[in-house]
Image 1 (cartoon, helix red, strand yellow):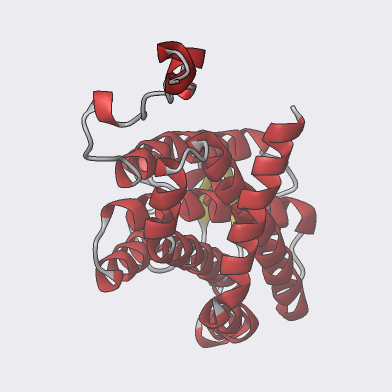
Image 2 (cartoon, helix red, strand yellow):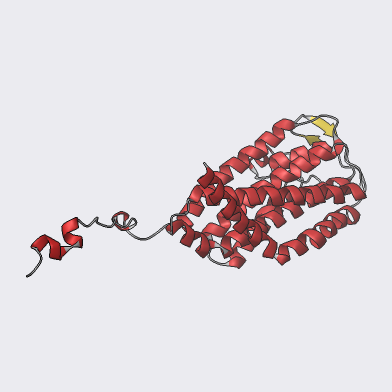
Length: 280
């Protein structure tokens, strides 16, 4: 048990150091997140938009700029965590493979990456909630932060999967950006006339969007939406684990992956002179 804890702590330290070196991600958190959330609030008209919250069937009339601010906060959080985990996985791919081939357990590496993702997601979600509360007052800030946290977890896991499968940074960045934009733009009734389409339930951030909307404008709590979002996270985590295992695989045949144990020499082999008799 102590050995597993030591391996997990070592792998987690590697992950946190990798995150700390990503200065571009830190700049995105500090500057891009408040800028994008605030612009989404200021640029959109404040007129009320009539919409139905699919999670409860309740009709809401939120201000259009406040609803867009919720979508903008989700978009910023998912982009940042997705990019952060993609960069960490992409840049450390060869290092992770060497660790795995040297005998470092893959489950410990995956658990460490998940722990780093959870820490980063919690910090980014708390910061995004604080920025949102500076411009307007959601009804349930804690539920809003939980929704942002779950969305960040999901896109962080997607970033791990993209980092394990894609071979170029531009491909991973394009995949994360387009996935987040399409996902959230289709769910915003201010920008999409089909925001109430049943097919949108299959989008990666559907649960988080419903929970965040309820947190901002509804008096009803929707914990079931967070469960839906965590189910998306679990499915993405399983796919990311398979992608990570594929990335750290070895091309050696099965019989060559483990070296044979050294043969124990007998006393006669260690002392050949004694076994043959001492020469006169």
